[in-house]
Image (cartoon, rainbow, N blue to C red):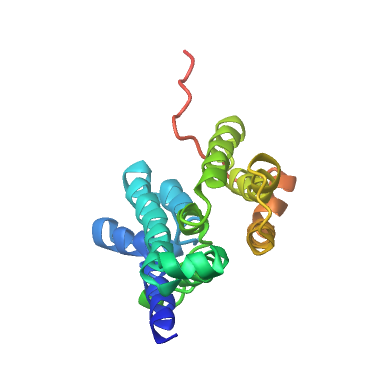
Length: 217
């Protein structure tokens, strides 16, 4: 039990690594939380500082979520003998707990005054370590929606909503806690993007162009 608590705390600390804040301050002399949408994440970093800063922020945020959840493989739940007697359920449940800890760390980072971002990239990395097949489909969904709409918020919400749908209807997942977890993720993504939804409806949401369209002469 003590070891499990240690892993949960460590997952939170990993999630608390404020990549956008640290990179913004060290290399650009600004606090990203004071500019643009004031969100300490890859999207706002891209909007304010450009791709050169946003790419490492995104990579670090995804990686810290993934690593946080892989801590579960150091726990007793991953022991072959334990899995033989109790199945994979306890391991999946513990992974879900680590996902929550990592994402909370990103949203409320202890290393940055508890002012973080929305945790979409960290969530993606963390969930990738829980159920990678559906996450990869969600990533493809995100890219397609982004290339068509140029709205990161819409792409994130669409990918999140599709996560439980892919699990159930594509991969025939039947483990109820995992399905509920997927539904909660979809709901939370919509809740955390309330302001974005209002701006999308009003037509004032900022667009992101990974590759700027060529200007016609």
